Image (cartoon, rainbow, N blue to C red; front, side, top):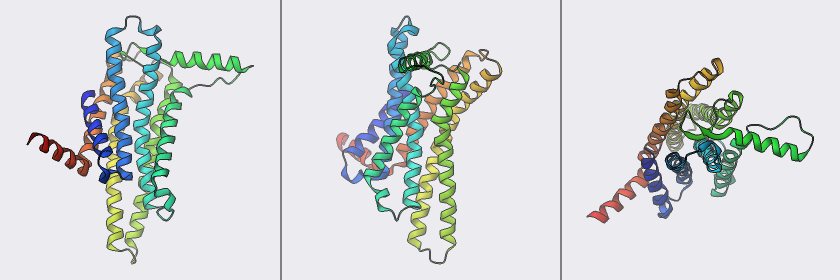
Length: 291
């Protein structure tokens, strides 16, 4: 499954990068989402290699790094869709502020989303009582090392799901904020579009542009719906462990991993199919090579 993610995301990234006509803001956001999925797939393949080669997984520093970067990759996927929704908000609602419609602004938003995604796995816990900076650092680092370790239930290095409140905080920040943020932006733009369409001054060109942007947002909602489906087994697992700590069946842990992997396959396939220009340029290039 992850090879498909790497293949399709690489095709999109390279096609957009090497064709100037495709260097637009929407395609920049497509590259951002594709890069996030590529990173997630790459980390899962690295996890698979480590699974076969490692003997004592729980005491390896490499497992801590793998768990951290796997968490970052999954967070970036969620926030990449939120960045796309924010971009649509700029183009539909704040279009008079031209500085918001520039590449510089969108690069800044993308950088912030990656920065947040890198911080989320590290900010899951901060000590409330301390006496010195050394004590804070020791407690903080030891807590992070305890959270980001090998999970025998999931057969991979990831966030330990046995620590309930930390897991709830992690999922709320990593998935909850992007999910509900996109829904709020979508509803606001839909309301704005209906108001514009009901006005007599609305031109055909304006309606066409708004409807096109709504289709883009619907595509984002489709992707976030797939993401929600991927997170459903994790939510069930959280509730199960909250009600009966340590009693969740092992197949449920494996289902969480498999569902996320399968849904990322659907996401990158959907992104590839919906980007018609990049897809057509790629297939034309393939035809020129073989014919």
